[in-house]
Image (cartoon, rainbow, N blue to C red; front, side, top):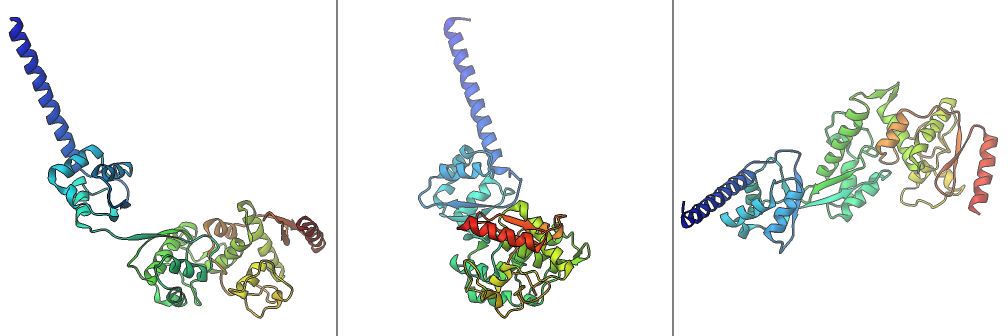
Length: 341
């Protein structure tokens, strides 16, 4: 083979290899945008005004919704879909193909979401205020709906009075178009998942105590405890007092009785407030939960620590001194007061 023919042959082989590579790349690109990733649930995707196609595609790749940002960008330009992408908040499913996602972004079929975080220990009034502050509904309407549990359906026994304690604390993704009833239903659904089916395994009692009574105790633990390791101990103190017929004398229940007039520190006059929730005046558990307890407090109320304590007093750092006798308790109070001073 002459030198000229050899050079032509090498160029032909290179051209063929290049064409083969392009065909393979195109085939892989088509496969990647036409085959769903297919793992996991829907995800919130935010497209900001002015974002490039590459930026949008890269974000989808980082969220695990598409296989290749390069392939999706190429598909957007080849098909002309890049012109129709709109800014907004989208709920995209990994079961969609890349082309279907481009279509969704182009049609503007997005849903506007807001994140609503309800911390452990929030009362129903505080939940209502959070809903209103996020512009998801009025606090007044929320409280009115929460005061009528019978209007909701649930697989677990709903309380008679209101939904205090049953609005499970968590972070919720709420459609801006939803009403307060939908938000409450979502919270009850989370309660069903975590508490009813998770902790109580679909049973209304646990070791001889009703779920409602355990929730009442858990709400008191939630309001009193600042440290996770002390939650089972505080639960034990309250149960020990109940078994002995002693009044619980729990400050958190008095704060709840005061409503929106809560105090940084209770006075002796506050302890005389006329309310069924005042456990300084009335024996036994209060008539209902005093806040929304989290999972840790519910677990503590279900399985309290095995300790002999009957009293506790809070230190300035939020921890507690636990005592077995009233004399020990009085000494602990004096010591804590000295620490505060």
